[in-house]
Image 1 (cartoon, rainbow, N blue to C red):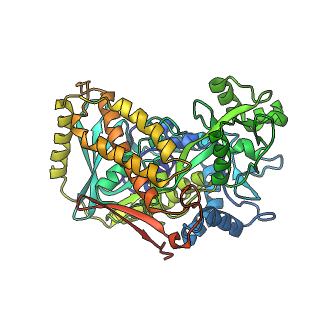
Image 2: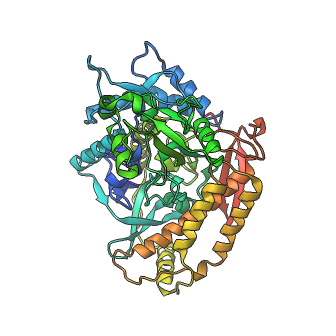
Image 3: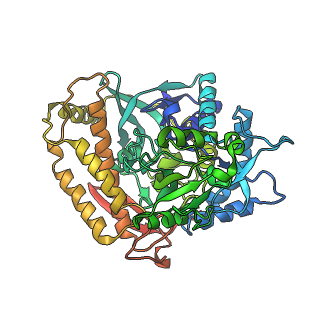
Length: 536
């Protein structure tokens, strides 16, 4: 029997897999796409760690992270992250991640927003990609087993105990049930629900969160989505914070700077978007950096700007716009990745380990997925050793799941869900995006409820079993529909402005909301509440 089933093959999942395998567990990694397609590769700019305490300190890193969270994080969890950051960098270095170095052999570090210190280690502006490829190489070296192109359908839950998961094998259309002593969700975040206005890949459709929610797992702080301030106009391709970290300016059409480029992301994003709503164009100005520095430190940004905007950043201003980038909320866990379901764990962007709160500090996402991936992989492996094998029998869940998939083939396709998805994406960005307001939130919620009433009219045109993209698109759409609703409900209930969540009708921070939001499915009813973070 599988000791540790890991669903998701991004940086968090692969790090957990390596550490569980090193701890002598039988590990299987299951993913919808191939590992090198994961969202981790989009984390270009770098990974935070205090390595040299002559000008910085771990305490500074802790305080910067907590302040960025707007008091909604667990300081003990942040302390764990920051204190282990140095070890994380040394571990990544030991397995072959090619970090940039100074002339005297130290790790090169750059400044990111929300801090006054040079703390972000990097590999040019390909940091996430280099980490991802190195982790995957190590997994292959360790002979870790993979199942690619498996779409997560349901978790197997019996008496509040997780015993594995049910998947659709995309290659042949068969249902695959995988039993395991422990299961780790590492399926990525939910910023991809803003599908036309996001830096996330097309495959990021919040599947893990939707499946977890339907299984009764608690989700937390779903109202907090970080919008990256600098993505390419018309394509939403990310231009990393590394560009501003190396000295790029944010300017208007007249070349005037209007904000400190290295303020926290929520502040920079709001300042840019206010001007865009006022029909102004905003640009990133890198011309003063010079071609040599650009090619040495941010070559990917130059390549992306030219390929997708036909702009040479050493000579021209680069038009930009904010886009949905990262989700602070997710599956509620403690520092060990434990959820409210026994033997079910979560790690990475799909999880809310109470580290980022209302706004993530740039450079902390890669740090979280690797640091907690290492810790949780080992922790879950040890848990699995104390769990006895159980009978792998066909469950009622498996039968019902097969029936649900069969129904999609039998339904007539009366409604074009592709058009609905396109409409919802744009509407979500406008009404549940950078600025929110009660009437628009309610309007969007009503739209979702109306669409949900017509679900029986939504089917698929393609009735084939093999690589049925039409079916996968529909399953993703239904997950996006559900998670969008959870984001709207959470946004409606938080009647204040804090970090990435800005309510026009409640523009100030309210101490009564110094609490995390919890949303859960109980007896088929969506239940919402606020609770103070437990510091234990």
